[in-house]
Every structure is written in C-alpha cells, then in structure tokens.
Image (cartoon, rainbow, N blue to C red; front, side, top):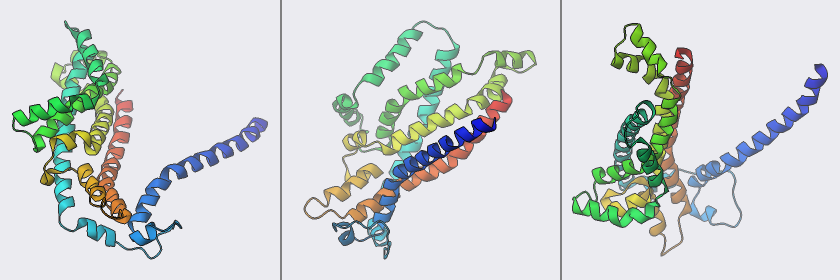
Length: 283
C-alpha cells in the first residue's frame, strides 16, 4: 500500500501543476481586462506591454460613467433579462413536465419540433422578427425584445429541464399521496424541491443568453436610447473609428458589463449547492 501511494504521489503533483497552469491561462484574460481598465490609452498603445497597473487610476471608469448612458443601458438589460428568464423558465418547466410525465397525441412531434427550432439559424429569422415587431408596434420596446429572447431561450431550456424532470421518479409523488398528500401538495413538497438544482441551472443558462445577446437587440432596438449593455459597449468601438481606439475605456466598459454577471453567479452558486444537497437528502 505504501508503495502504491508513493507511486501516485508524483503523478498527483504533476496533475496539480497542470491544473494550476490551465487555471492561470483561463484567468489571465480577465486579469488583463481589469489591469488595462486602470491604465491610460497612451500606455496601452505602447509596444511594451505593462503587466501590472502601476500608476493606474479610475479615470477610464469616470469617463465611461459620465453622461448616464451606462445606467440607462443597465436598466434596459436588467428588465429584458429578468422578464426573459422568468417566463422562459416557467414555459420550459411546464413543457418539460408535459413531455416527461404525460403521454399525449403529438408528443413526439412536439419533441421533434423543439429539435428543429434549435437547428434554425438565428440570422434567418431577423427579417421576419423585425417585420413582426414593427407591425405590432413593439419595435424599440423592452416587451418586444423580451418576447424574442424568450422564444430563443425556451427550446434548449426545455431539453435541460426535461432531463432533470425525468430523473425524479413519479413514485415519490404517488408515495406522498398514499400518505395523505394531495396531488398538488405532493408536487410542491416532494418534486419541486428536487427539481430546484435543475431550475437554477436552467436559469443560469437563460440569464447568460439574454444578458449577452447582441444580434437580436441590434435588429429590434435601433433607437439610441434603447440600447442594451452589449449594444452600449459597441458604441465605444464605433466612436473610435475616426480616431485611435481608447482601449482603456473599452476595457473599463467591459468590466462594468461583467460585474452584474459575477454578482449573479455569486448569488446563484450558493443556492445551487444548497439545492443539490437538499435534493440528495430528500431523495
């Protein structure tokens, strides 16, 4: 036994070093963005890279935040994202329950339709989506772009939740009903807590899709005052076409766009872990 442990100890050390190197490679672009956001454009345009932000300041952040355009874009992005996540999870959850727990006519056709929708290129729908939103008066509106975000996120979310729903045996609800629980009570007390990790994971996916979506917003929100954060970030490149790009402001604005996502992940991570533990105990 001692010989085997001594044999695997160097291998474990090598694997640990490889994991550390991979982690550093993954973290370096994030560090470079944060470091560059604190440096003036003169330093960033130099041929000699500066790996540490010595002498940096928050001047780029002050320039980016001036004018109130960031707060307006942040408000629009939060509204659109929260609406899209809520309704996408609601619709996908009901559809996943129907597919996994009930047998009905057209069930296989519905599943194939979901797959077919996933294979459609988003760019092929832009003209139809623009005409639809323009005809209904939803162009340049939070409601209009939210509807399209929901339609884009729901198909894959159904597939995610379908696996979680299928993994929870229906016998648990039947056992609870035998013990005196109603059908609704058995679902909310037994099945729903076990599906919490799946709902959180699907919510993370829906949040990232809606928060980072660019092309649909570019088509449906042409008005300058209705920019989401990805469209707002694009304005720094557009404004710099006639002159040198201010990479300090670009990096500062990119950092501001990433902060809400980081906060969301910090909040969700704990709930996802607790949901997994609770589901394992209750199962």
